[in-house]
Amino acid sequence: MLAIIIFQDPTFLSLLNLSNILTQSSVRIIIALGVAGLIVTQGTDLSAGRQVGLAAVVAATLLQSVENANKVFPEMATMPIPLVILIVCAIGAVIGLLNGIIIAYLNVTPFITTLGTMIIVYGINSLYYDFVGASPISGFDSGFSTFAQGFIALGSFRLSYITFYALIAVAFRLDPVE
Image (cartoon, rainbow, N blue to C red; front, top):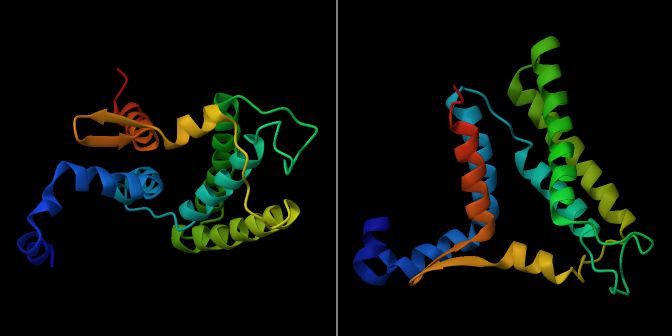
């Protein structure tokens, strides 16, 4: 299939197209890089996508601008991006810890454990989203917009900041400390 596409449209292999593909799949890249370590060690985590969804909704509500008339938590100031990252990482770590405890100490297979976690996190997402009014979360601080939507330009090749941050995080995680 790929060979046919390349034959029909040689620009498919261009740097511009590659950067567009990377930009459009930046969230999936984060999930893939995170789950890759599990797959290499013959594990699995079916809940990763739902965890990213929960992290996105929580982060979005915490990063809304104070000027936003529809701010979910109007009494709360806009949080700094690093603090929000720590909060959503802590949420993911707690979910991962629960998965690990269930797998290691209750001897439930990773597939079943993370399938259950996926359903539970979906329920939490639904409850949280209902709490915020089941409407699009908008009105972000301009610093967050730059952080989330910006990109590094290397000629005609563009790499989104989000993909860049994920690659750096995985590089640090995979780098053995001696």
